[in-house]
Length: 324
Image (cartoon, rainbow, N blue to C red; front, side):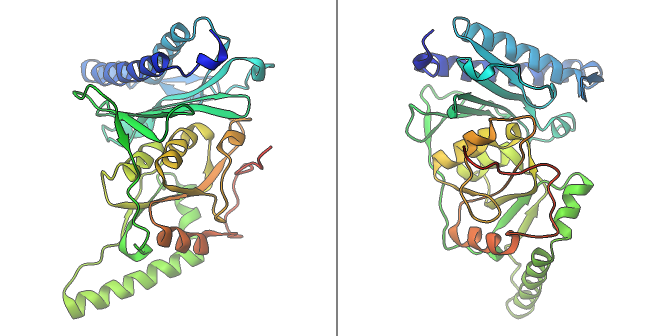
């Protein structure tokens, strides 16, 4: 298979079909066999649920069939945690995937999880795919202008354009961040500028409630990552921004960020600088990405002013690698 055909229309359709198959299969498996599916096993450097390992094997098997004539590396970003084999850069493509991105939420029967895939070759992202629990699959490739989604029951892909609300202020929107682990929560509550802004919003809302009997619009969601990126660009909920301070691994960010950029959302580092997503994939095991994603220019500007160069935030690993 020639490298130029790695993202042909046929292959894209087959990848979308495999993602739907994986989502449908793991949902059914948990319904039928909850005790065994959610059992924990040690998987190299990290423990994993049995359903994780099953999804990995299913995805790998089908991807190897799809790309059977091409040299490729299928890298499971979440559980395998191994170094890429030497010489992987010479392979036709790197398939970086997380079959269940948000396993903790999946296991608790919460919906902010997805099946995430990104295809990368020689400093270039060839395509990205996000499959949601409802079996809608968002995708884009270097051959597609913008983002498409495959919706169950609709024969043709639907174009997705991020709704921009550039005049909306931070105090008027909903922001989302990952704060389920203590270190992530502390990274936010120790940010003095952010706390000051929240106190300012709280006082303004209290005054507005007293004078006009109107509730404030500002909300906080403690969920983030690839699934929330799709909700921003497809207007499923009135979320104005997703932020990450400590830095996430590329498989938790790049697929959704690539789609968000292609759909027209704003995606930068905490200082407001563009992030080279391809550069993040040079070392997917060790790189970390801190970011602001927004559908509002005003909200994004306010968040950059609050979060930029915060000396209290010390990422555990180098974040946002310099493009090279």
